[in-house]
Length: 214
Image 1 (tube, rainbow, N blue to C red):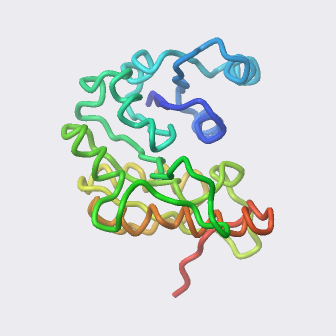
Image 2 (image 1 turned 90 degrees about the vertical axis):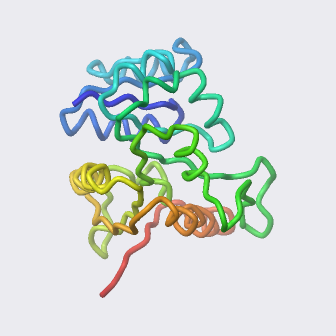
């Protein structure tokens, strides 16, 4: 399977490394394919490709939306909405506002009545969006190693088959999947980013994850 990752910052690069390690073909998409960090990633990963957003969206059988939340509409426009049609899209985005956190708490551009994922699904009605990988740092996205065992990855999306595809990837990446159902569940999953970031902002603790216990 070919994976097109729309976003070339730390999150996109980390997921790209994971997909390459699992034997997928990977293209990392960016506005500027010759920026220094992207050239370095390409040199460090000879099997990885880079391209524009449009090239990356056309390349991928499966797409990963790994851009800042505020840039989703811009990235989709540059990638071309037709390139998303019928494809599973792993939505890693969070609706963080540009303002600085207060007491370690991020501000969001959404409310609890409408998630960024739902907005993106309306923008791309023929894509099969699944929220995943939004509530952990890039250090732990692939093969996390915690004393308490595999952490939990919360996913949701309107297409059950797409959720299963992403659940299989989550398992390969070393996580336990917690399937929360349809896209409206992103209203609860996206704020986990706020909770995850508080220890980072207050105590510089960025290496942790959530775990569901039964």
